[in-house]
Length: 190
Image (cartoon, rainbow, N blue to C red; front, side, top):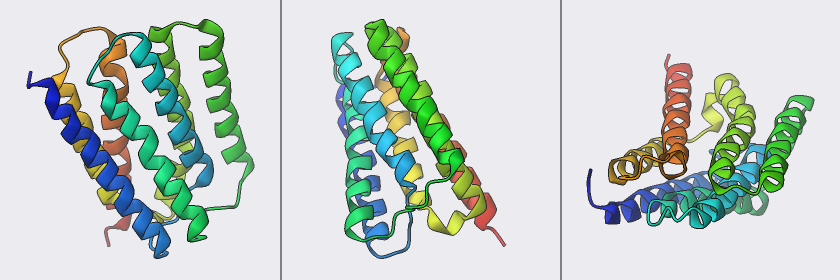
C-alpha cells in the first residue's frame, strides 16, 4: 500500500477530468446525459457523507471529488446548452432505480450499507451514459474516464482498511471507468 496522502492526487485527477469534460461540453464536443450527471453528483456526495460517518478518512476525498466533478459538468451542460436534454423512458427508469436506491439507504441509516447502495444508485445512473457511449461514442470524453480510473486506482492502492465502506466506491469507479473507456475507444475505432 502507498501513503494515504496520494488520495489527494486521485481527487485531483478526477477534478481535472471533470474540468476537461466541462470545457468539452461548453465547446460542443461532449454532450453529457443530464439524468446520469445529476445522479452521478448525488450518489457520490451521499456516499461521501456515509464514509465520513463510517470514519473512512482520507480515501473519502476521492468520493467527494466524484460528486463535485459531475456538478461542474452538469453546470457546463446548462451554461453551454450542450447537454443531452431529451429524457427517454429508459433514462427515467434508470433514474428511478437510482433514486429508489438512495431512498433505501436513507431508510437503512447504516453507513456501510449507504456505500453499497450509493454504488448501486450510481451504477443505475451510469446506464444511460453507457448506452449513449455505445450508440454515440463521439459525444463522450474518454480522457475523463481514463483520469477517473487512474484516480480510483491510486485510491485503491492507499486503502489499508478491508471494510467495504473503505474500498467499494473506488473499486466501482475503476470498473465503470474501464468500461466506459473501452466502449468509447472500441466504438470510435474505424
